[in-house]
Amino acid sequence: MSKAEKQASSQAIRLDKWLWAARFYKTRTLCKDAIDGGKVSYNGAKGKASRTVEVGAKITLKLGFDEKTILIKALSDQRRGAPEAQLLYEETAESIEKREKRALQHKTLGGRIMADHKPNKKERRDIKQLKNDIFGM
Image (cartoon, rainbow, N blue to C red; front, top):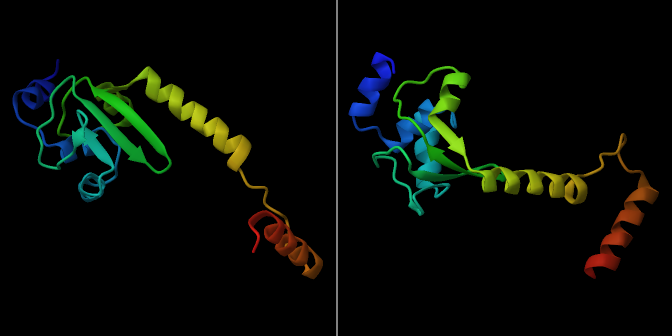
């Protein structure tokens, strides 16, 4: 254990500072906004930016369309490189499985096919007719 890790483990570290050090967000302001916006929960309860984190705590993060559940393995209040930041936490197996399943569903069902051109008049009429048939517009 390095000197910085010993010092970090002996002092109280805020949730927003730990999320920033673990490289989930680029700035502490983004961390605080995510926490205040309800996108972060700490041990099943709504997170607060000033809450002190503990080793073994369970954090649920909503990052875009993904939701991650992680367990805190170590504490740090300094932002370091990605390999070192990944040592601070461990994502649960259920979380990984859910994210992979959701990504596969999104890819197969929700992925859009982008056309290489703007629809012409006939194609726009066909699209409008299809919407009318499906949604009854």
